[in-house]
Length: 301
Image (cartoon, rainbow, N blue to C red; front, side, top):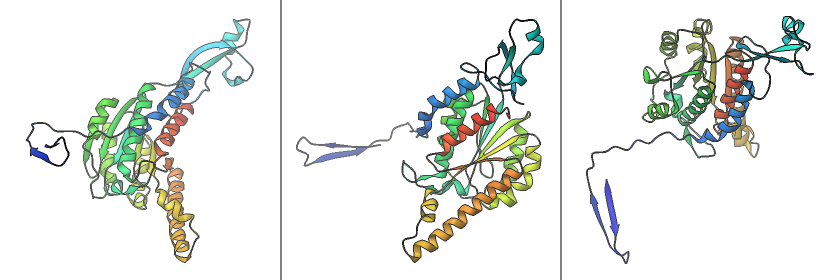
């Protein structure tokens, strides 16, 4: 540590270096924390504390109450109604203690910098921010969260993650200039996750997904529900809107081709039952959390 001390007149200074037996750990910022209050409000509504719920594959029986106009007639409990003077309906709530496995790609594509409200940050920073928001939300929903950072090997692993432990595990992570090993990552997820879970893969929508991840989807989708979240580049969207001169038109054509490729990959993954969230850096954490709540409301977890 180097200390510099200026004199009272500011014309001279003394400087000295000292060896101290400490290290400073820079923790990843959690900018998307501001989205938690409205998300938790939605979660309370899903949990039946403020409104009745619809029935789905991932919901469980909560209670009986009197029918009110607007309730789904399929929720009427005819046996209970026969014993009561009122028509009685069943209410449902999302199942708890579901498993959410968050996998963050820390390979080559995560090193690319994208512009956002906070300046140019690597894709990895946005992925970690989105993972923190999803982890905080899923923990409040009483779901079990497992975290895995992967490139060609496991970079960090946190079973039953809590927010403080997760932040500490993310602190030393940096992008590696290697190709993401999808086969090894899928094998690791299958080895760790014994029961059906929501697997959230934060990676880039690159053409390499088609020959890397796509052949592995049948084995993964047979046991888990896969959700891929990807950081879109605002510069590409800005280029696609450019029409000022000939160079801008050529740049716009290249950008449109890139965007069309991402749309094609999204449609291809959707045909294999994979949910995809492709959003700009400032929007990805909230978009991913919204998709998690939508899946939970639809009973797909």
